[in-house]
Image 1 (cartoon, rainbow, N blue to C red):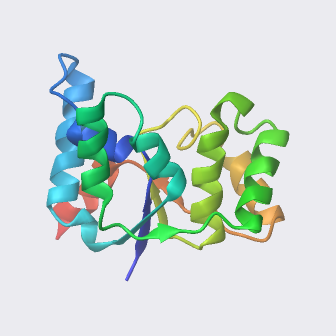
Image 2 (cartoon, rainbow, N blue to C red):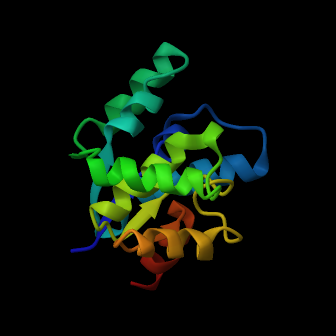
Image 3 (cartoon, rainbow, N blue to C red):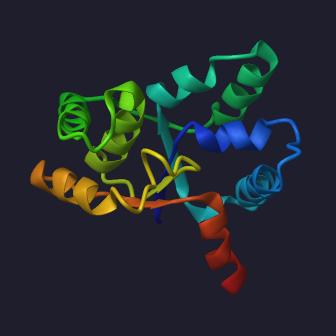
Length: 160
């Protein structure tokens, strides 16, 4: 069975109040449809980094995000994870100000997760950084998961 790492933007979009932005509203709807429809049959994982990020902000929303993630198993932030995250920042693939994003990428890569599901196209699922990211992860001895959004995964679900 395929595995997926859930990064913070997924529960954030799932529990967010309805947006006036057409794009944001569509992303929220796609996230709920994907999650409620069984997450493409993937076995889900996340990390303490996700829980820490999800627990920030307005208490009611933070509680809703954490509640959504409560049954998702946590992957450890090991020495290999930290080393890979540092490498991604030191090679300026992920900016230092977004170091938590490098942790998400590193956790999913080190634990050999098949997919990293995110709405973060700036620092994680950025097509302009993907080749450099893939090389850096491979140089560290790991494979970069498929970086995608819940919406992209829904396209496959519709074929069934």
